[in-house]
Amino acid sequence: MLVQKTGRTTCYTTGRIMAVDSTIDVGYGGGRVARFKDQIVTTNISAGGDSGSLVTTLDNIAVGLLFAGSSQATIVNQIENVRALLGIEVAEEML
Image (tube, rainbow, N blue to C red; front, side, top):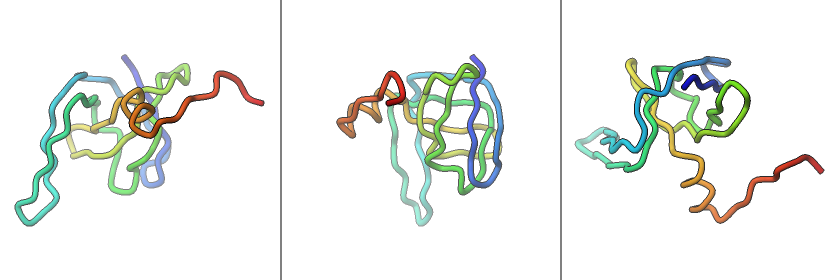
């Protein structure tokens, strides 16, 4: 599936989902590593400063929130997990 995002650093980019339901270890320096489960992995569509960007399908269906990446891949929190953890509902239409 193709996805898109607009970020602070890289502006508009598109890529492809490579995996879903992935478990990813993210290094935070000083030997600190955090493990994230149920993540989406895309081709590299980001750089530092793009975290928090909404990742959508090309027809603007929310897929997730970008939070990590490397020169090979971008890691995205699944939008349903974000929605559930924050206890929010998404409007179906504009008011």
